[in-house]
Image 1 (cartoon, rainbow, N blue to C red):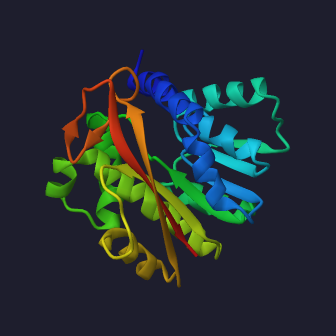
Image 2: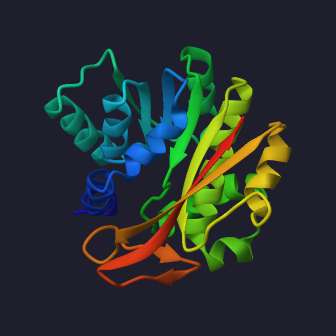
Length: 237
C-alpha cells in the first residue's frame, strides 16, 4: 500500500467518526443561504455526504485519486446522484487547475474543511515552489511541513473564492478556541483578500488519532486513541 492509499484508509476512519458525531452537520449549518458549494479537499466523502444531506449541490475536489474513489462509492451507496454531487480530481496548488475551476464552474461559496495530506520527500519537493510563492521560507517548511501545506491550500482556497467574488468557509481543528480578537492569522487573510467581514464559531469536539489518521499539532504527533480538539469555523464574506 502506497502513502496515498494509506492516507485514504486512515482518513476514512477519522472522517466517518466526524460524520457520526455530527461534526460535519455542524459545519454544514454555517452555509445556510447558499446553493452550490465548491469543496476543496473532500477526502473520502463524509463531509460531502453531510452537505448533500442538507440539500447543497457540491463540486467536490481532491487531489488523491484513492479518496475520490471512496467518496464516489459512499455517495452512490447513500443514494446521491451526479446531478447533486460532481467529483473533480485535481490540485488547487496548480495554476492551471485553479484556472479551470474558475472558468468552467459556477459556485456560491468555497469551503476547505480539515485540510490534510500524506507526506514524504517527493511531496515536500513538489510543494516547495508553491510554498515559497505563498511566502514561507525553508526553515518554516522544515519545522512543520503539514502546517505549511495547510496554510498553502487555505490560501489557494481564498484565492479561488476572491477571484469569483464569493465567500469562503474554512474549518480548522486545533486545541484552542479562536475569535477575531485572538486570531491574527485568519484576520490577516481577510485583509489580504479584501473581505469586509470575518465570522467565527467554535465547537468543542474530539477526534480519533491512533487508529485513524494520526493528528499532528504544532509538530507533535498525538498517539492517544482519542484526543480533545476544537473545530473553528471561519467565514469570510
